[in-house]
Image 1 (cartoon, rainbow over the protein chains, first blue to last red):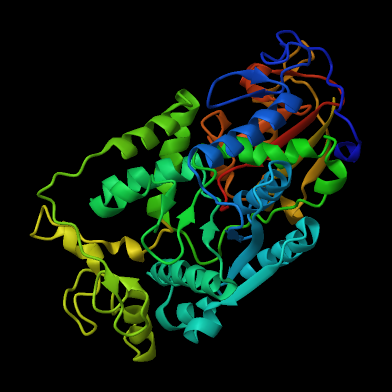
Image 2 (cartoon, each protein chain N blue to C red):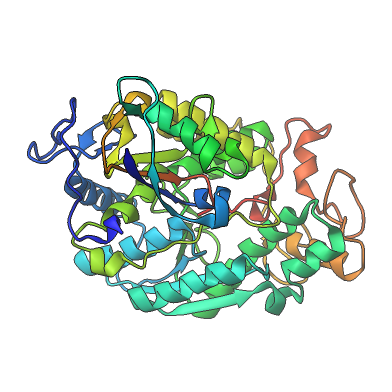
Length: 373
Length: 100
């Protein structure tokens, strides 16, 4: 069909079509949400990649020789991240050893399909791929877990397990850093969610471009300032760009998880998108607000330690993954979920603490939780 | 008017057999022989969308987070809902709302 033709399709002349504000030569093809500039696709490529390079340089995200795992789900963000990062690595000589790291949650008809995408990326970008699974690490697939606990709270298990699985996989790869494809829209959404949930510890952390620097493997987000709109349009425009041959198989996976309605996050997401339509800068401004929150010195922040059982970083005696796993294995899957305090496994669920009587206390639930921040 | 419509980023799942590309023939119905985006959206809703139209439309426009390209050009630069379509135009809808 048409899009397979190399070179831009010639659009008919339209009233009001303008020239690119950067080169002044070609027809503008995109209104950048960040700057409202109207630019052509060639200039878009240049600024899109340059801005990410600049973010990497300005924030010292990598050191020469670093081994870096790209958290790869097969979705749009991580697929574009894997491509752009391997390009920039070559072009700007970062001297990074890049790896693709995927977590197989064991969701039939969802993850098995998206992993096929990641396997194609492995070949296309020439990056070694490591797949780790819930089954191997925990003895349970998400399919098993949903069978045991139903469709309520299953996202809690998945979020906690995924975060830890990514860390464990990264340790197996002996990498120095993990990068994830979280974009500006995701981060703005998470700032709002953390406010809505009164989660002070995460609120202060979720806008950091690098987290876990005190832990074994820091994580960073090179797309922190990159709008989702541009990430989505990037591979699409590539179809008729010179990178056509390279990109024609950049078919990212875009099916919603079959187990995840995740309604609360969905509302926040839709709200962000509504704001963006009215004022695209809102996304960067929310991030800025998140960055500038100062937590009062009287707010007690939880202390970090390690899980007594598995050694994973935790602010409680047992890490959240171990508490949840305990519940599953003992047939008490509600353990570690909900608002009851003090069931076996200890004061495991920190999520409740912030909302309870100790108003100005907050706990570091962020080591685990539903969201990868 | 012959148009090519493409649906991506998960929107194709709302259509019959999850078909991504649709070659359609639209009859302009507003007397002056024009088809504008607003009319196209209404047509898509009643002729192509099989389920969950709220994933595609909100009010009389696309749902925020759905990207629209007319001949590879951001529809925000072409007049949005009032953009006039022409014979053999290619209109692409991509959802950004699915997971990354």
